[in-house]
Image 1 (cartoon, rainbow, N blue to C red):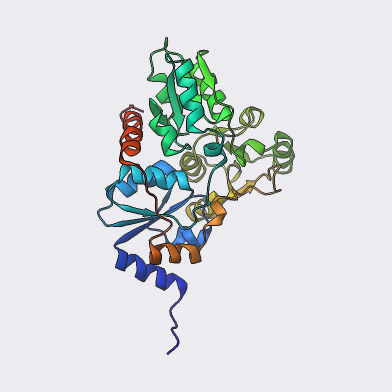
Image 2 (cartoon, rainbow, N blue to C red; image 1 turned 135 degrees about the vertical axis):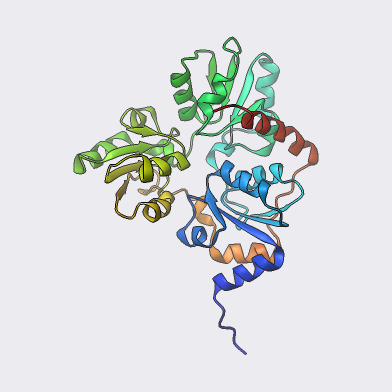
Length: 311
């Protein structure tokens, strides 16, 4: 007998069988966001995973996000739809280079963006996100020199906002945000002169100088949908957020600027996940995140230090 069940129905059945939760980042394709139990940014989803009392976490995002979920929920099985869904920021910051820096500069406090590997987190003193990076750096004694890694744009933004000059910034960059050209933003602003601009701090400094609001992915969504009365907004981040923006504020218009890499504003890694791959990872419980216990224990400590910072 031919089955008439849809792929979505099969995924939901597998979710029940596996006692699983499906998490999807805001940059995922709309159909993955629609089927997810929770959508959010990387840390928010990992916190959601930590609260989950089931057995399997299916993380629709990129690999470092699933690693963070595993670090915070070490007894759970964590799977991802696509193993090759990586991150240019992770690739730009190998753990051995961070270890080498620490040997040469043992006096520096290592502040690592959450967009790093588990191995780099294990070498860090404290973790930050794009929403709390300024507060995390301000929590460190002013006389302490800092290594901020790996995002150069976020690091320079934090340096400007804190006024601290004793920050060394790693030279990594996001292949989406770092290639948003200010000239294209200027052109789009000229076409929509009443539109306000919301930008992620991973964007270049000349883009940030034009922004009416600077914040994390979740911060941008909140500001656009509930904190500004503006009816038209230019959004300088990955265009996957459009699904959440339109769902939460259907009466507003949102515009996106193409970057230099692909004449689009999409992360190619985020878009590697599909419903078919989600079905396969729940069925096979693979690709599975496996990390050494020592690495998880060391990486969890700087994450917990971050969570203890008062915002």
